[in-house]
Image (cartoon, rainbow, N blue to C red; front, side, top):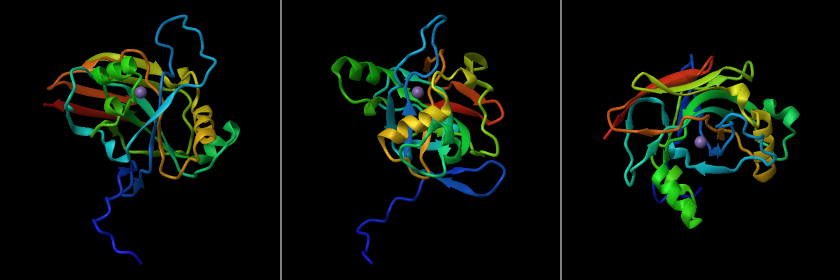
Length: 225
Ligand code: MN
C-alpha cells in the first residue's frame, strides 16, 4: 500500500436530517437557467447549461456566510438540491428517481462581477462560481418521496426576494439527472443544484439571509465581512 505524501483531504459531508449519519459529497453539478424569469418567456427547447463547483465549496447552510474576496456583486441563488445515491450513465428519465438518495435546499452563491467579466471575455465561470463557501446546503432529507411541487423562496433582512414553486422547473429533476448522465457518468455522492428562480440580487455584509424549499429544509445565515 502506498504512503500518502500529504494527509488526504477529509471527505466533505452533509448532515442527514433527523439522524447522526452524514452524506459524503462527491462532486457538485449546477444547472443554469431553469425557471422562467419573466412572464410569457418561451419554454427553451435546448437543455440548460451546467457547470461545477468543488465539493469543498459545500458548507452547512447555517451561521456565518463569509463575503468572498474579489467581489463587488455577491449574489444569492436559492436552489433545490438533488443528492445522487446510485450512479450511472445514460440514465432513462423514467428511472432517474431510483438514482436519487435525497433532497436539500442550497445556495449557488455567485460573484456576479466575475461572471459578467467571464461572459464578456468568453472565459470559464469557475472564478465566479467555484469559490470557497459558495455552495451552502441544508441537511439532506432522504427520498422516501420525490417532491415535484412546493415553494422555493429566499428573503434578505426579512424581505422576500425570490419565490417560485419547484413545479415550475423548466427541466424537471428526472430530466436533469438523465441529461447529466448522458454527458458524464454520475457517481454516488454527487449533488445537483437545479437552478434558481427570478429575483437574484446582491448581498452585503451584515445581511440576514433566510430561505428554503417547503417540506425539504430551510436555513438562516448572516453575511460576514
Ligand atoms: Mn444557479
